[in-house]
Length: 116
Image (cartoon, rainbow, N blue to C red; front, side, top):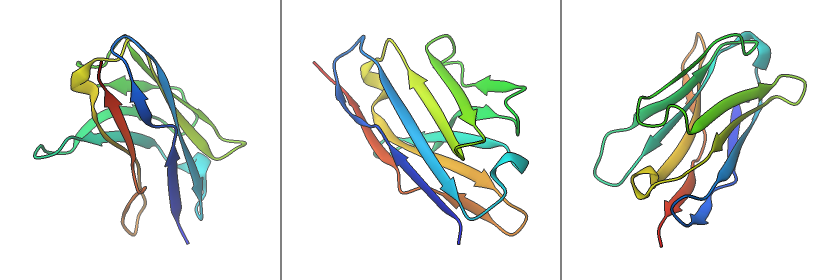
């Protein structure tokens, strides 16, 4: 069965860094683009970053461009989100995502809180 398991979230001060990981299983990982989304309470889920099957192309929301980096290791079936110079407005639950032919899958999410 398809599983996406995020980890690496936590409490960090403004200006700090975190690295999120998403371990994937149950599908041909290297055949699919992967995405990171985030959702703050009371707000819509928003796309943060996207990476193509072999990492050739990456895309970012304007709000994180230059601060966040998405990457993947197909040998480990893992996608990462390196987050630098974090701001309070980055506080959210972060989810990894894959769109398969049958349906869209989401991880359980990992909480990122940026606060002094």
